[in-house]
Image (cartoon, rainbow, N blue to C red; front, top):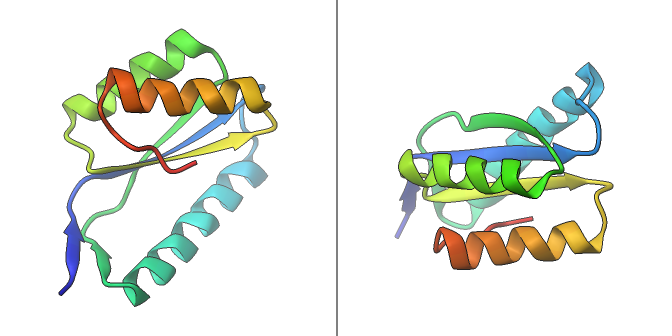
Length: 104
């Protein structure tokens, strides 16, 4: 059985504004995720909502709430050199505040 994902997002979180290379790498990573997931019976039926955020907790919480309102079924956060504290905070925000498991 194929699991269909209609609305999803990929969010790059970093200390600095991403440059063109980081954006390109993020998009390449997204394509690889799609390929791997399709082999495991998960079909993504749309292009992702792409967001690029600073590693600031209130900003990240606002983004997660926005994505929840957009009914994202999957949120993939890419944390670029932000440290363990931010990783743990994102996991908690996703789980407790918006009720989603976030892939990081």
